[in-house]
Length: 301
Image (cartoon, rainbow, N blue to C red; front, side):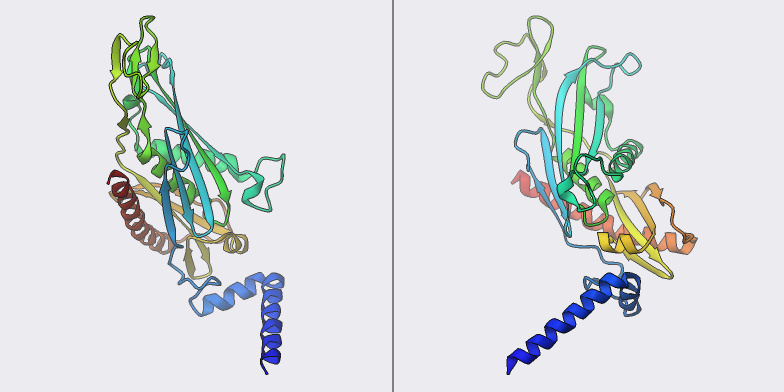
């Protein structure tokens, strides 16, 4: 008796899936009319988020972040460099964002993803303008030695809101970062001090022990999509492909606006819509800060 019902259910599922593929906008709007999204979330709700520290054991700091299915891995590597003449008391931070072919069917092998340089620039600008890091803290010996910090972010699964996940992963990795202990040897060069040999071969300690990087105003972001009178927070890749108007807002933990990014789209973002997006972002910042603090506290135990 159960077979006919099973066949009917399967047929119904196939019809829904076919309608979803053939008429994605109509399928999407039918859900919006009920104030719910295809994945079952309310319009203003973000996906489940998780942070895992120490994902790369060979890095000086690393973090794996998941927002829904969107997955980002950030690894930080530090090396000693000679500072520039213009900034003799500052180190450097280089940010790179990578989208390998495994992250999405639209990324082709041998061809760089179009989004990679855009997200890289956006991340670099956000970290710089937020003043989260004091580059003077990366100085070792004025005019002679400073830290060159490479922050590499890899997208492992691109299911929407790439910038939000990439920024959270970068922030998490920076909070996990352990600046290596270094000293000056007999030749006047800065060398790393391993845990085993201590400072036996060093004349002058520069960093006596590993230390954390001081993070000041930490930025978090939320991407929203705008369709007619609807605002949807934290869109999936499917939702982003249907709706052309995206708005990404970056706030720091004090609520200060760091940036507002709207990459085109036919719909004008009215003041009221922007204010609603900012309100959603403020709520999201509290959630992400709480999650980051919780994971950091767990690491210290």
